[in-house]
Image (cartoon, rainbow, N blue to C red):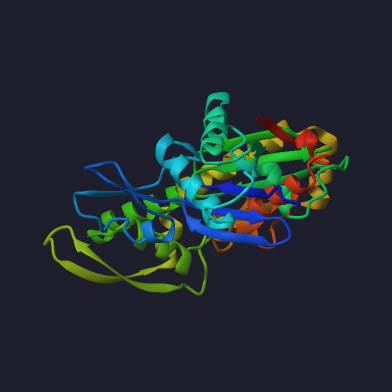
Length: 335
């Protein structure tokens, strides 16, 4: 078996690479560091993420994907090439077949860009699968059955919701709200409430360490450091989980509203299935504390976070690629 197959979850914040029979082999940030003078790519992944917010004028560290779609074609291609080479080694006899997971709401032009970037990065063939379908496969949901399953996939750039039955999407929506928007909201909240300027990385750490979608009785606290807006000097303060909950209210409401829109569009028979099966939450931002309880309260439908929620989409792309014939109907464009 010389033809290598790779599944890639090309995320706004993290890219995961799945090799059949080996599982997840790469889980690195979707960040590329570029030299301003000669436009040369200096670092990708973990190494580039460490540079975020810490670069001199001559280096720019940026995320080539915005809201789940390609914002900068050249750096995306370089990033995909880096991940393929890191997975398979730069010297290889055969070019791999690659399946990439993309947001369900992506336009045909954006989809074409993903296929072309993947082929240019060294793939023999590129397949595209919609994220909610890949997440459902990765979460061990039997998507081929004639029952309704709803997946809510909250990533870094987008939140995707879809009701899946018989291997296809019956009703879906995508909102450009995810972990990154949570971080921005926390950053803004700390700036307004405490007059403290903090970076994206600090905001992300606050979200991961003490963030909660609901107000909790036993509050969590964390000490953070930043720059005082008034004096311009470094200062440290303590923030609580309530600060995070307050900061991300609007973003959570947008996700809930989108979930309700999908439920409104769902045929009655499938809606009845959902009451039994519940809603499945996947992807990185579904790990926010109590988000499943919030969704369950707001919609009246039970909600659960998938096992290995962070890895669902990448696992799903790998499984679908390994069983191309079974999942033919669920896969989009190929080249």
